Length: 40
Image (tube, rainbow, N blue to C red; front, side, top):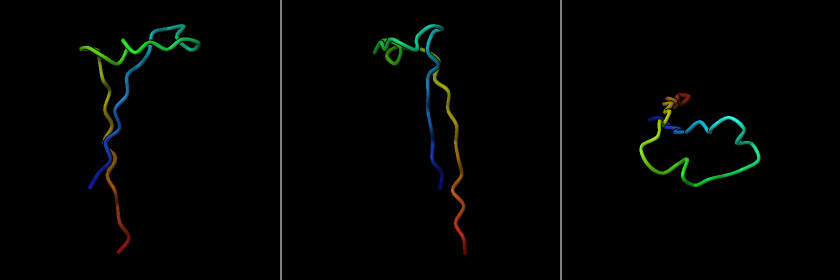
């Protein structure tokens, strides 16, 4: 089992604004897979 986290970096100076366009389209999406380890 694993959890997958995906994110997109925003442009510089974007801390005070939000634009939905950043997450739509073919922008670069980063992905991190975290394995889940269970105790026996």
